[in-house]
Image 1: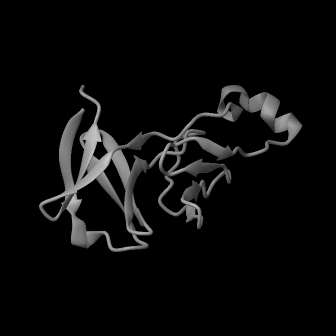
Image 2 (image 1 turned 180 degrees about the horizontal axis):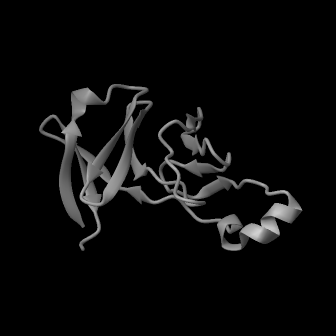
Length: 119
């Protein structure tokens, strides 16, 4: 993993979120209950932005486009959208459950750091 300084800690107060572009990756940082989460800002369905998704009380994000729900800690699918039968057969692979990409974070020297895979 390659640790990268993403943003100053004071730029992400409790309850806020911010998208930071690091290389080719758009990462959504979320401060939920004073825990910093970093996830891909692309929904696994059709790669639409997640920034405006609802954050649930139990620490999940709901896709604003398809209403699938993902755990912020693990990226696991908690609830997958249901496609109407006619649409689901047309969309094929888009309707397959896929986890959200999550990135480890740490706070150090007043900054939020994120670990990215080595390229």
